[in-house]
Length: 164
Image (cartoon, rainbow, N blue to C red):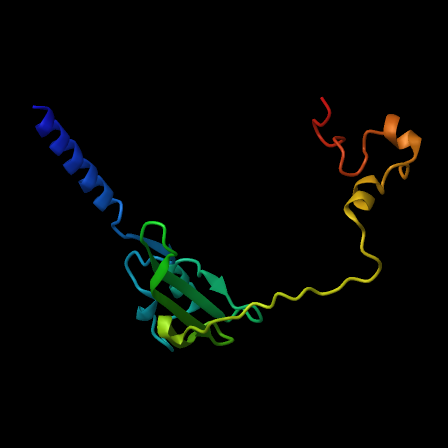
């Protein structure tokens, strides 16, 4: 009897540990409910019809309001490993001045580019303060009347409901 219990416990433990290694898929960004962004047609749809069919875009263009982006991606995570992006779709919808769809472009994971971050820091003017200078540097700088009588010290608890 104890031998059968040990075997069942070991089997259940192995099954649970194998189940923990299953990959987890997560959808990020725009998830099309009915219409897909690729179904938008140039020269026939308008901003209003795209907004009604697809909803708000994930991102609008930084420099003009005439390009909308619908972003979606699927990422796979396996146990403790770094997540892997399985697919990415970026649909760019460009409008003309009248609000008509001018162009619909689709970009995938293969169109992506790696961006190398720069670790340099921009130097600031003046001298560098040590930790002790930063901590003790404000002692004696505030006038005494602000410390006792006035509760509206910037950064203090003088706001609505503060200090009660």
